[in-house]
View (cartoon, rainbow, N blue to C red):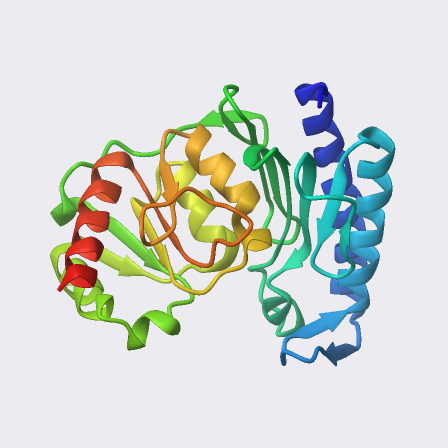
Length: 261
């Protein structure tokens, strides 16, 4: 299915900007919180932001399907598919911390080809498309050149499942061998990784809508983005191991060894 990649990226950025206006409005005014069946919060900001995003994307690329956090799948998954999380980090949003974002990615026949990550209150927007690099507010960014685990900065996100996994001890050893450990979470540690501020991100409990755009950004910044088993992201991806190439290689080997043991 043919499309103009630069036009699609512009549309994603426009859609993210439209969502940002809605999110800022509710951030300043306050909003009622409802709870989904899975015990996660949702607000009018989530729903209205996704509606705004869908309107822009459907107009710009009508041949593409859209899969969104709040309104599900419209169209088929096997061609061009937009992946949308209008407000990733709603728990942070409702608790008045700025670690939430809008995530928009485009998948072409199973391959992630572009992504926009907009954090309007935190104050950063990053974007990337295949072969064109990763950008932070108009400036190209690259991952760090760290090669030794002893010099690596590691960030841990949602690792609840991993705590009951054989790889938990491997993660502990990795942390002991690293330079420092942090827990930035959500979009933030992926932004830091892509612009050289971190060397490894570990998460065992994610949804592809949370990380699809960030996968493109990290990859185009020169990093490696897989799940904890080393597989590239797909619609079924539920974990992340993302890092600068040398540190990712070392961390993945440790995870494989723990799993094999």
